[in-house]
Image (tube, rainbow, N blue to C red; front, top):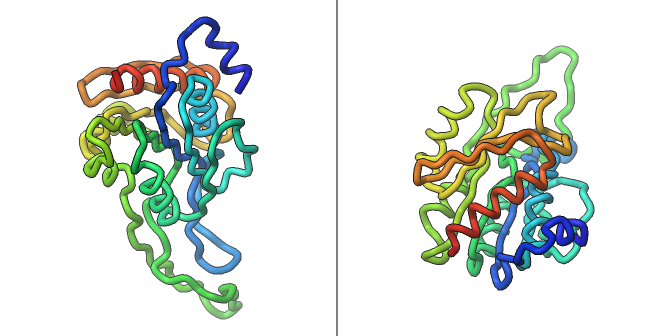
Length: 230
């Protein structure tokens, strides 16, 4: 965190006295005791957001899903595994938060049935289909039911095509204040130290963030949040 403070130089710590919640990583939805449905999220962007907010003076709660990353200095880390666990932790932390940034990749679906024992392969049979059920839409929920009237809510959208059009549609559907939209793929963003995105605002604004360190994108996000917090 010292590097982030020094990098800001003489800039005022504009998040002093604020409590912010950041989610990071990717949820895992268990099929059985050894297998799960997951995604490629490393959690690095969420951790960059948490470090940057702490450097700007905020009290930070980081809800971390399956990251394996070291805890940022001065940040309260709440480890979770599944989407349901992440929802519970975010709602609890958001009760007195000024801003919530949902950077975690939350699974849209989970297996309808959890097998208490390892699912065995049978040589003479094809595997049974896996029935999925919807996970809670955490971003839409916290956007619609704000714990505090002036709370700022930020979402993330990882898109593989029609990035801005899909992002605008998601922003309207979720009801958040800001949506960070970036293009992802097997060789893009996930696990990288760098990112590139456009931050869409509910007021119609578009703030492009060129390819660079994930801390740079984090600073842009907090700039936009701080402006909305007044």
